[in-house]
Amino acid sequence: MFNAGMSSTTPDTQKKQQIQKQSDLPWNVVVLNDPVNLQGYVTMVFKKVFGYSQAKAETLMMEVHVQGRSVVWTGVREKAELYVQQLHSLQLQTTMEKTG
Amino acid sequence: MKILPTLDGGLCIIPESEIDWQELELICSDEDRPTHLAASLADLMDQDSEWNEYVVPDLEEDFRGQVKAVAGTIEKARTSDEPAIFISLTDAEQWYGAINQVRLSMHARYDVEELSNSNDLDDADPVIKSAYYRNRFYLLLQSMLLEYVLETD
Image 1: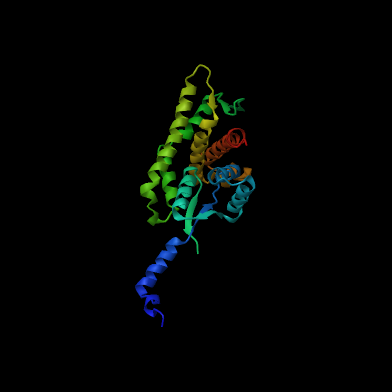
Image 2: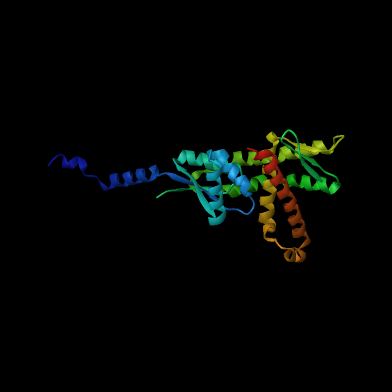
């Protein structure tokens, strides 16, 4: 049999691979609804921070308003953290969550 | 109080009474507000993110800077020969942010957004009624900043 030993994995290796796979998953930046921020302001922030068009920014803003939350960006953890930090400094209630 | 758009794309606030000045000064009244806001935003993050350690101090400094800038402008305008407050495009974000801090704080304390009809307001505690009207004024000021200064493209 062709190099069967090389393809088998120990439980430890499988666990490490699983952890690696999880940490590679993209992260969602999630903006939550709040009763204070103005709709126009939230739209402006999405345009400014993410460079979205007026139409896309308004759609996401309405999603926050109607559904209570919206995934406004998805990608690598470091960049997601940077976006959350920017949105916090602009006083939007924001969190991040792992996809999958 | 008069609030007018200026030709150079800013806003001009002309307070006409002592109460007007007090309304404006109350934007900067609570020294703990920036700390509370930064902490409440950090509460939304996973504890493992070490947000409190690395991000909160910067946020707090930003929020404190907004309040300080607004307080300085109001104080300077109050003592000038022709008392008026000019908010340029470069100052507008700080003003908007400082006012937002007050509104978030008032919402947390009094839930003023819930007082939407006049019957609720008639029966409301005088402190809450006062907070409601202050919130309305701040909301108007934010809306004008947004319409005439910040969102002009």
